[in-house]
Amino acid sequence: MRPTRHSICLAAAIALASFTEGSAAADQEPLVLGVVPQQSAKEILARWAPLATFLEERLGQPVALQVSPDIPSFEACVAAGAYDIAYMNPFHYTTYHDLVGYEGIAHRAEKRLKGIMVVAADSPMQALSELDGEKIAFPSPGAFAASVVQRAELNEQGIGYEPVYVRSHVSVYKTVAQGIFPAGGGIQRTLNALEPDLRAKLRVIHTTTGYTPHAFAVHPRVSGETSAEIAGLLAGLAAEQPDIAAGLAIGAIVPADDASWDDVRSLDITAEHAGLALDPAPLDRCR
Image 1 (cartoon, one colour):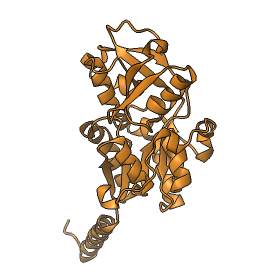
Image 2 (tube, rainbow, N blue to C red; image 1 turned 180 degrees about the vertical axis):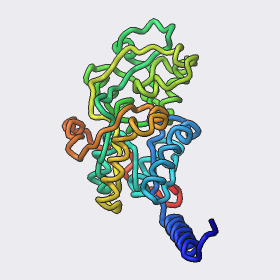
Image 3 (cartoon, rainbow, N blue to C red; image 1 turned 135 degrees about the vertical axis):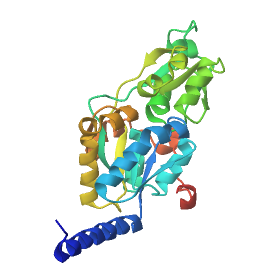
């Protein structure tokens, strides 16, 4: 059957509409996704780029994943409001909610965020008290469960120590496994994500109290409609995109609101005490 003039015109109109829609999406300013760098930049890109692509496809708007070289740099970019969507630790969230206006929309389901103290697998150490007078590796001053809560518990127990900040969770694990430091702070999720050979060289000697986990938060410039859509997409991720969810290694995600992190606020720890970066970074360093 030969195509009629009407069918040709209709097909052309559909093609033009699709092209126009695609061009319009391409012309939009991207939503910038920032992720607290608990792992190497290479690993973050491998784990989080599929989520950025998924959000871009569903939102019909470009989503650009930005990776900071270390946690203090990430904090300075959050302080600058550089990210439209950010995955940050609970203390980051409560701080930058007040400072910038970030609004929590989702977090990991069920699991409470707990810090762990690791030593080398063959270390004789069995308890925190044995770390008195030692150097202890932490990712950064503001890493919540891996550093802030750990240091608070050490201080409460009267254990003297020298903190050394080594940029990321993976760096903590590597330096402890290599014997550079006798112990270091981390969280179970990043420990579990290690290569098996490295994981086998470490042992947990202490686990902290649990708190509401990391926040997915949006900048106030993101519309309420888009924020709700992002929260819904994240909540459905494990069921709809199990491979992407598995790559993130954070399990199921549930919608949340600002009050979800009130348990973190109850600690009454100041950003200055925790050592968070409060001075905003120049935006060209964040994008």
